[in-house]
Image (tube, rainbow, N blue to C red; front, side):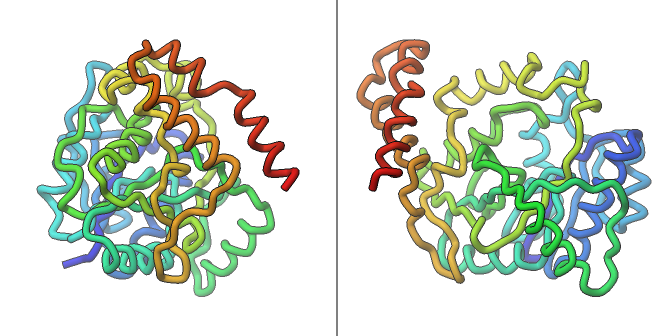
Length: 303
């Protein structure tokens, strides 16, 4: 029995670059110790890729009216087809290395109920990764040279124990909102939200949006609006890695440092709690004014 089951709903393998980065990502997962991989969906080329890479493939994922896989169905299928203590939903463009498994083991020993997240490092890649001996150190060095740590807006994976996330709304994958809801849900339930950015390198392979209708980012699609509704409104999709309750540092859990961004976020949550009776547009104008962020940033610079 593996410690972790990674599950994902990859995009179709029809676009050459998307196919390339997905094979890179999934291949990196198969090299991890104590990990099982499940690929979900019926997208073109997925069954063949799963067979090629030696991972489990489950086609019967429930979909939206537009044919987009539903997060709720993905979670259910992962639970039904895994014997692992930890589950992890992950985007199929993310390269993982053994530090990910080490971090998961450390977190599981320290907390009973949690969700583990991380910022990602954005990385341009146009060829298959060479997984020959030493590939991890070569990749780390090249990624750090480019120094493109993505801002803490959402997460490309969520690792959690079986005791959590039993009920997930029927969000559509690949649209905005559902990932923010994962952090909101954990905070609401009192589970630890653990940012492991200081302890792992999560590599995101950059790509365009040609796989989406009109080639537009997912924020502009109608299914994003439905995700926001299912999440309970705009306030619940404001949650990001800035809302982490802990950080994993050298194998121990610590409270995140109070940066200007985190202080701004704490102020926003406070104002939302105080003015909870106002309609959402009025709350937005009070809780997220740009002037507050600028004032706090100036205060930090003057210290």
